[in-house]
Picture 1 (cartoon, rainbow, N blue to C red):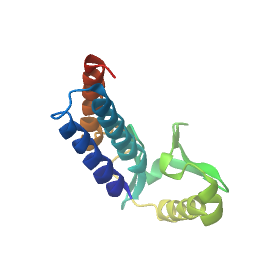
Picture 2: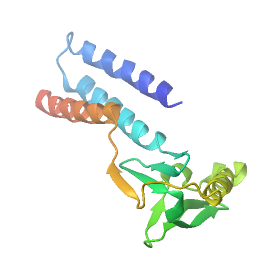
Picture 3: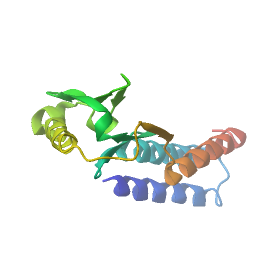
Length: 162
């Protein structure tokens, strides 16, 4: 679904930018800016996920990625329409945007299943050389490039007159 959105809105943006060669007006530039901004948002939010590895889990949120050793997890909360979150030994709560509680989640119980899988993996107690949660800024080249492109097109639309 994410790639359909990315390719679809990308083709529309390219078409709008090509139309600037025929008529130099701000409308197509503002449309391209909207398309590129939609791609950036979709890449950030729909790219959120949880990856279970041998001794750590990775929580990928729109702007931040957390690498969490299973040994540091003290509680796993969520399910029943609630947001999935992890509580670490340091008292930090890590929320997962990928399992943010929704109407569809209340029907399909995806958060409940994710909580069960994480608990199963955490109880196996695999050792990790990593002792603390590592928090890093998430780089998404497509989202970042589309954000820069959206701002550039918005400035161009303002200069040309919307």
